[in-house]
Length: 194
Image 1 (cartoon, rainbow, N blue to C red):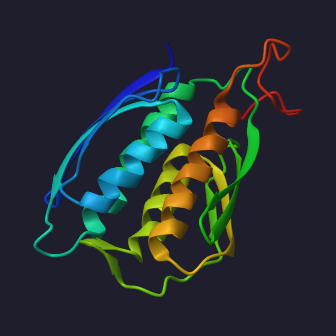
Image 2 (cartoon, helix red, strand yellow; image 1 turned 90 degrees about the horizontal axis):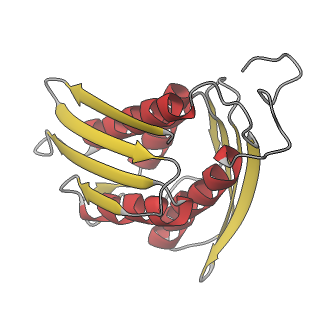
Image 3 (cartoon, rainbow, N blue to C red; image 1 turned 90 degrees about the vertical axis):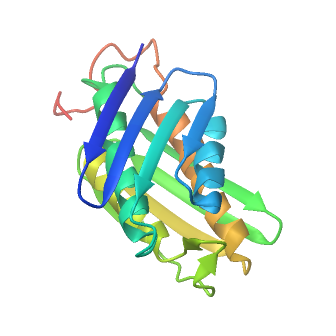
């Protein structure tokens, strides 16, 4: 099983995370940020990754530290669970619609962390969740997992829809990229290393 358990404790946050890349999409998520819990559970469901997160942080300041640190820990867990990346598809992309929103996500599990997002959000918050932390979350995840990660918001006005599409599109892309292909009996790189 491709699994990982990561803990991160700092003066700002305490996070425990368990990930199973070969799960069924079961999740138990508690960050005390309602919308963040919602999109993380969507990520788990649509990626078929089993995910457990217990996270507490300095929410009296804002949500930034906790959201970013969950991204760090989830990225580390993805990297650990993938091990040497032998037999994975490596590349994937997905376009997800949600009402008026349409989002493309493309990824390469290359070990070269990079993030590109072409969207600035119109609202500062969805519930208690600060929308500018979306970029911080995905940047932390991409850098710590070693994922080349691109999002293009093709259209959309509702920030809830757009962000939820981003998490779902990432989930479906990751599901495809980490899938094992029996025809690939080596690391999927002409360099023979990722």
